[in-house]
Length: 82
Image (cartoon, rainbow, N blue to C red):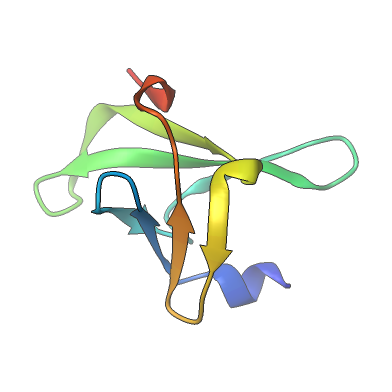
């Protein structure tokens, strides 16, 4: 799958039934082999205009399904960083 195919998909946490963001507005953590190891999702407020100060790091293995419109993830509370 190409990065351009991921862009624009909504990221949804299945455990919390919560929309976390959109791919393309996230950062990617990439290892020395060029593989994506994690998604880093910024927390935004005020309709995305002001950064709240913390982010969510989602290891690649916590991505459960990549569909045509969204990415389903399953993460634990300890991954919500401040």
